[in-house]
Length: 193
Image 1 (cartoon, rainbow, N blue to C red):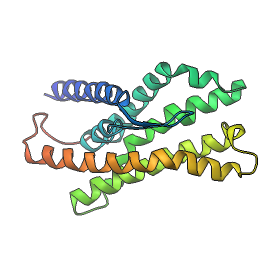
Image 2: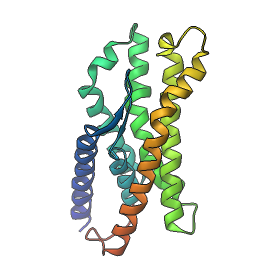
Image 3: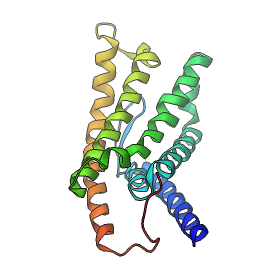
Image 4: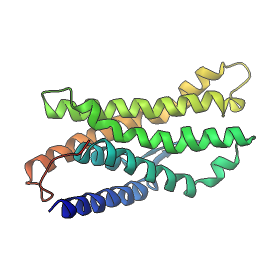
């Protein structure tokens, strides 16, 4: 029974990665130097976390981040030094998507599940924004206009697409989780943290 549940969870998380990858290719708006508002591409990563806990959520996010990095490898090559390339890999891909797996941690503190889903989703959206914000300062700051402080440039550039993405993602996650709550769980329930 335990092996069946782990297999089912693995398959579900793999499907969440596939769905997130497909959704990442449906941009609603694209920034000129990277960054998109997508059709809820991060929502499946958050859902994996809320359904299966930190271990599965972070793992799902890491795998998705790696896939995104491989599909957007030219972005890594724009970095001018090896250290900057490592920073792009870490901040713009691996860490940025891995933090999505922490949604379940932040959702636990709420007695109202819907509020927990919304808060957990929003908080990991902010964490992902912070990864992009720091990357914008440390790595991409050379693209800031000369009369604009780098931190303001990064805040405005990354905030202009991350805030709408976070709002859309939060609405989608809450809606999907409420639907899933109404259906009996085929996996037997329970998240392993």
